[in-house]
Image (cartoon, rainbow, N blue to C red; front, side, top):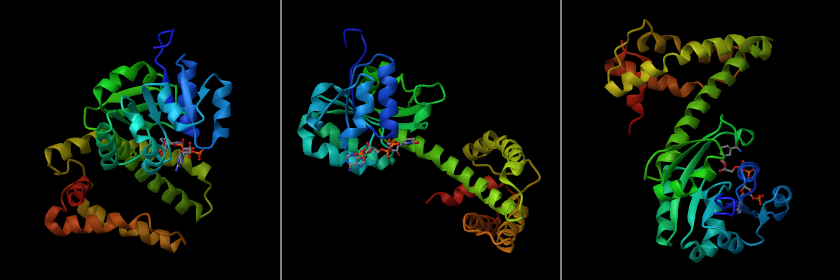
Length: 291
Ligand code: FVH
């Protein structure tokens, strides 16, 4: 604890996100020691009151709590492997984007070195950090989560998912998968109307209204998945949808627009219908994703 009762923290990585994390910590009065591979990026946070470590060893020695926010897990290993012995007694919080497998590997590696490990998945872009719109999934060491909690609260909302370090990136990547699926549809829709000279701005309210209405099916789909019962209670069964879906690709091709974002779902729909589920809901396609 600092003299003001604020937990001191080391932050490794001063890219767009690392800098936002440091600024949130400083704004809340937490003493911060920051390190970045390219030293010049530290000038901005130094001007705001961060201590800048010139070596990674210095950064690790400064504080028990060490937050890493680097490009990917390879870069975290590249930074920490050479100073692995100095991780003993540290509480490593890794907010770098990665997979559940990478998180579990890094947790085992850190624990083998005498460090405690907490993984995090940031659901925010840098300007959202420090606002109520940001939230971060955490999983791994509950001790680290508890110890670092006041510091972590400065970033936004928190959601601790339990001891398995893979759970935070699993939830992070599930939400990102939903987001990219959404973007796939949005990009395709704008491209299609744009091919006929319709301005995206003009089409946006229609797209927003339609997607908002479709979002209303999300909870019902969840119930169907949990119950394993895809019997449709609406009038749009997958048999009907699989017959109409080729029109999406055909219309795109006719308009000179690639259909490559659309095609993977067609084969899954066809397979589901061929297996006798044509009268059920589209959401039953989930069964085909399970390997
Ligand atoms: N920015 C965003 O919108 C997203 C929001 C959700 C979470 N992601 C993840 O956060 C991690 C960091 O992202 P970032 O936005 O800070 O990324 P950059 O601005 O590109 O900064 C990258 C930092 O990583 C350092 N770095 C890269 N490779 C190495 C290496 N081999 N050794 C040491 N450091 C390395 C880089 O250093 P430098 O280039 O300035 O020297 C930056 O500090 C990321 O996992 C996102 O997926 C962000």
